[in-house]
Length: 82
Image (cartoon, rainbow, N blue to C red; front, side, top):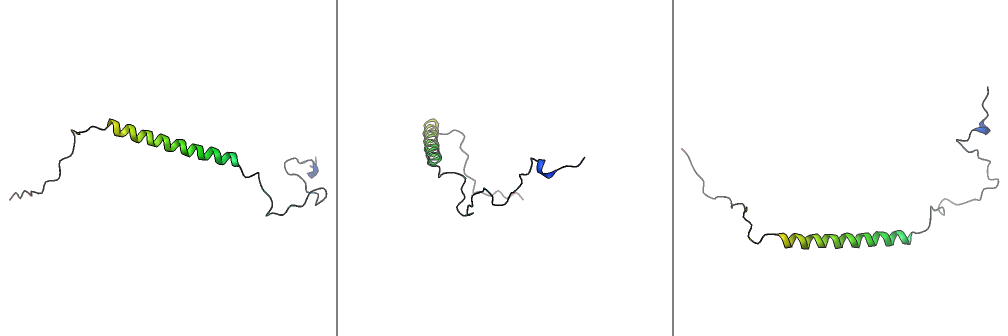
């Protein structure tokens, strides 16, 4: 059985420029600018900033006034055991 390349559906056959519009490569684009995407990103950034601010306020509210487990400052006295 011989296989004909024209029946291969994995690779479309090029027929030259017949019926295909000519498009310069510097003018080709995937889509429009995406203003809605920009709005979603800006709103998400604002919501993240609000959440950060709320966590900072909550962290300051639960912080104890006089911490019990403070580390003692390092001792300047040097013990010389001879």
